Each structure stands twice: as structure tokens, then as C-alpha cells.
Image 1 (cartoon, rainbow over the protein chains, first blue to last red):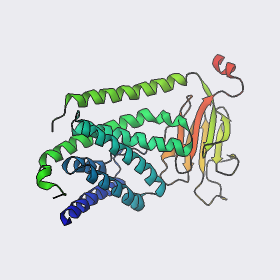
Image 2 (image 1 turned 90 degrees about the vertical axis):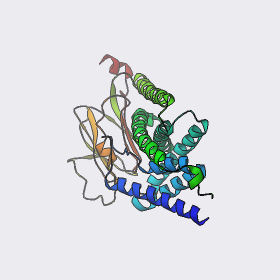
Image 3 (image 1 turned 30 degrees about the vertical axis):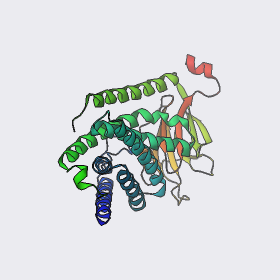
Image 4 (image 1 turned 120 degrees about the horizontal axis):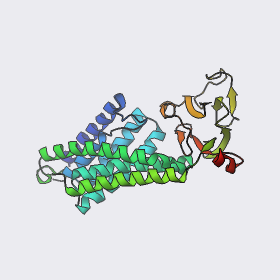
Length: 168
Length: 140
């Protein structure tokens, strides 16, 4: 149990720090408001090394913490929608076992942005925001590829689940 | 963990979907756009012609104000404002009270279907097709 708590703490802290670093030096693609989403790296690694429960916990706690610390409650709502949709899609994609971590990460990146734009459509009551969808899909794709490459390298270097499972 | 063939198929499919949405959007918004529609909080706020040059103050709960110069009027002390300018048939957001200023950095709009969004102030500025006489906008 203690070991499990320690792992959760470690992962959340890492994701939180990534959010912080990114709020200091936004890595943007020349499009306003678009970020790489480094924290997603921790979520994907958690999903592969530990499991679904851990990935959900890390993602949600990270979003709430960084929302309260670095941005506003409104921004947190967008972040939550993106995070939840992205994670749900990644969990399903991993279960289907047709893609590598890279493909899973790409789906996560794309659906993170799709989730946010869906909330914006509801909040602003303007369906015409679809206008932004292609740009957001492409930027999510690029972010997903970069995070996916990094995640695959990290997963390769970390010990397998059996030796390191927080459930033991 | 090697990248699989499926990963590349996925990337291709995503690119195609983005392209199709973009193409569909452009196709659905063909033709000249001559009017700017401003909505605040999902409600229509004001309409402006792209020919009516000037600076305008957008502020929730207040009618659209035409400004004599492009700066924030002295009587505004809070952050709930956006300033839009129209010049040479192009509209752009030049100032806003929102913290991130993402709307100010968005590109200028002139084509039908293009838009500028300010999420914190819930302001959407979009180009729609010509006002009263749609036939004229086609022949123009």
C-alpha cells in the first residue's frame, strides 16, 4: 500500500512539474493556445507501466492541481474535458492492441484537442467552431507523435509491470 | 515497443479526416462574405459590414461602441472588453482584457466562415455572407 502511494505521488509530481515547465516556456506550433502537452507523457507511461487506474488518477489529479495553480477554473474545465476524452480513447486503443504506444499517443493528442473544442462549442453555443477542428487535429497529431516517440523510449527503459506494479 | 504499420495507417487516416473537415468547411462557406457577425455568450451581439472601417468596442451588457481611436476608453476599468478593428475589408482583434490574449494573436479574418474567438470573454467574431441582398454579394 505504501509503495503504491509512493508511485502515485511520484507520477503526479512529475506530471505536475511538466505542466509547470510548459506554463513557463510554452512550446507552441505558431498557433495561439496550442501546447505540446508534456504531462501527457507521464499519463501514457503510467498507462503502459502501471495500468488504467493509475493513468486515470495521475491525469485527473494533475489537471486539477495545475488548473488551480497555473490557470483558471474555466481553463481547467477545458483541460478536464480534453483529458478525460483523450484518456478514454487511449485506454480503448491500448485494449484493442492494434497500435503501439506511438499510435495510442497520437490518438490521445488528437482527442485531447477534440474534447476541448467540444466544450468550447457547448460554452459558446457556436457550432461554427468546427472551423478550428482541422488545425487542432493536426496539432494534436504532431504533439501525439512527439510524445509517442518519447513515451516509447521511456517504456522500453523501465522495468516491466510484474516487477514494479504498485499493486504488490 | 516498435512502431507498427497500423500507427502509420492511423496517422494517414487522421490527416485525411482533418483535410476532409477543412475542405467541407471551405466548400460550405464558398462565396464572398461581407458581414461580420459578433456573438457574445452565444447571443447575437452585433452585425457590421466589412466595409465599415473603424474600431469597435465589444462589451457584454453594453451596445457596440464605435471608438474614435484604437485604445481602451478611460471609463473601462475591468477586463470584459475586446476591441475589433475593420480596415481594408479585413477584421482583426487588436486589444482585449482577457489574460491570455489568444484572440489578439489569431489571424485577421475576411473570408466567409473565418472567425476569431475569445474564450474568456465568450466573444465570437465571424464572417458571414453579405447582409440584406445575397444576390448582390454573388454578382459583386
